[in-house]
Length: 251
Image (cartoon, rainbow, N blue to C red; front, side, top):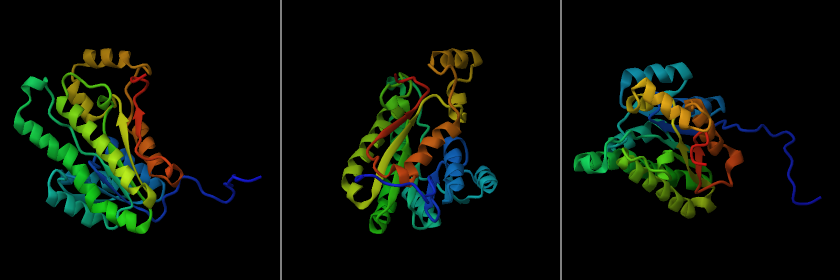
């Protein structure tokens, strides 16, 4: 019987020997993604700006760490140098300014552009050539459900995460034949420090959770599972895609 394949003797969802770089890796979704990649056998370097929290988080999961602000070219260079030959890039930088569009300053837009958009472009520029040369690579960016359903008070995130999504879709077209995939994971309302900042009022948070079809906020590890899948060998034929993890919000 032709056209089939066998899984006999194959260990599924392993990344043994692969090197991964996870930015924003000291907490939340980034830390959970790093943990999952380590459990799959990857050698993981996590990058973030705050040394104390980063070191504690990295030590807890067995990752290497580097203090780096990837909103700057120098920070990207430091992160990539510390990670070595990166096979898996998880670009997870953001938290742009909140407010109505009319109230966001040009400085906030500029900072958001550097942190949310250009960080992904620079990280990809620094790592994808090596992936192409080795014939294998994964580029994954953490975006947001607001790419498809904009929030009225997150204009910077709405615009720039949509930019990241379409940048990676375009890059996917260039590198697909070289064994490199480029995808995004778009979390819904997830129980992270950022969510607690935006919805500090418990009653407000409860009302928001009640509107989600799953009737709860997501957990970082639930988003990380999507990242881990996209990083796997088994996801080699998925590229240019946006994977929503939002408890049914976008239905």
